[in-house]
Image 1 (spheres, rainbow, N blue to C red):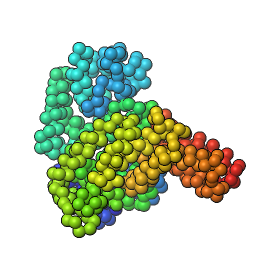
Image 2 (image 1 turned 45 degrees about the horizontal axis):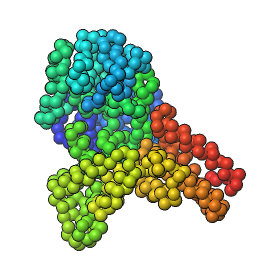
Image 3 (image 1 turned 180 degrees about the vertical axis):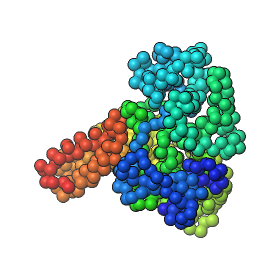
Image 4 (image 1 turned 30 degrees about the horizontal axis):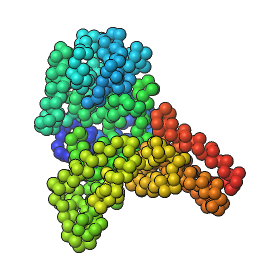
Length: 534
């Protein structure tokens, strides 16, 4: 069990240190005097405890045994607003808008998707008090780029408007950590917020002081969740969810219900927890390697992750950052000290003695990443070509290979020239192999009821079902073999339906869960031929 600690290990006594870094120590090792439970009174049957220590700040642990899939937290948003760097979007529902056909709010004239937008008048969208504020700041549609830039100030504005219009929510927001001292010392984020938010507020003649504006910007950078799907560009603050500690192999998954009043966030256990276990989520993309994850976390959350995965050169046996050794033809090249970005990399298989300096690793990663990102999202030959081209450069489970395979797992069977019922046996088996490769990695880096596993299990069932059906029709499969194959397909669909059934019903994952349930019903007809499958 890992415990969390903010990387600087120095905080003002008033700071909670809520963005936590993992270090290789047991939570149980914290001295009794440093760790005290806080009362939780918001709901009956709460399954977690809020604890505090001088080195960890506040964090959540399981207050009792928690089942995989069990809800840990479900709470409405305190504030919702546009993401930094978004395009022109509706202020009510956050959908991207076409510049040539903009609808406008009837009150403030700011961009909306339509006069019937479901977010009009709601605090999670375009509230009446925001509209009244923006009436005094009419947008200039002759300067669309400046209008887009102004969106960076809207979420901070919504938070600050809570002071007057919803003091209870403001109290909850204002207790969150902003890390002002660190952000001010960084020399990049503070000046950007000064230009894009503070000066924008002054231009708009809004009566907020510079320090509180910067503080709200920090609160958002440190604690906000990206929310929404289907093209939404929103971020939100929640009252308790931000207390979850970070880990690069998270123990929870979360979803937000954008169509439900209050836009609640639901955090579920993706794996079982024992009483006292740390409850964690990942602040980075789990399908990245250690260098990229730690770089992102340090830049955006202001600490350096030292979790078990980051500390292990093999990334818990996944080799998600491993290169191929050019000297001994296939050996694995790993960092000698993964927590040090300047460390030398060396071949760990055999005695060839090959090494790579950190600068060479960074250059190679940049070149590979740039090429990977140039591949069109629907280009099956492009992703396959990438994997083939660099098969002797990166390990087959390198995160860039996993990313390419993740794309291929969903493209095979769904794009022109690769529709599932038209695919030859070789391509169907290729999709199966890709899905199995992914599952081996996902079982380690996102175990349990994770979205990645649910989607991949659904993708795996399709080629298995097509090949089984074809073999049955050709009468080249025995009844026992047929039963064995169908058991695996049923297992894939059952797990997928369970995992993705936690997603909003109209999301792509929710629709996939529905399709998995339908497929399970159809498989039941096979029992008339071979008897009970499971």
